[in-house]
Image (cartoon, rainbow, N blue to C red; front, top):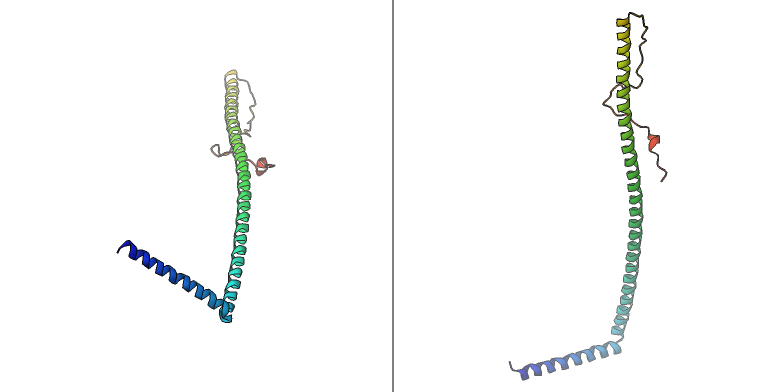
Length: 159
């Protein structure tokens, strides 16, 4: 197709569009039925806009609420993490002190046994009647492998 033919068709199409728009505008203005439809359409559009505005506002409010909730939860999470850290540190310190006490108990038990054996040797060699009472070992644990458990009150945290 030539350029002139294409341009001619475009002008015809444009003319037709202008005539159609003029006809539809004039027919809706003059005919009360079309005016009524236009008025309902305009009211529906306004109602839809208002509904969409309210929907956007609800969505924005919900988003703000969720952001505040996330912030509060992050703050709570941070506080709980801090409490866990303090409790873990206390636990490590208690385990360390427990190990020291366990080592001291074993050392004292060995000293006591050594002293008892010296007293027995003195009795046998010297011929002295030495009354060696049975010395209780209160620090000897029933099961030395088992850790000494701390009470719950030791880990109270004023945070």
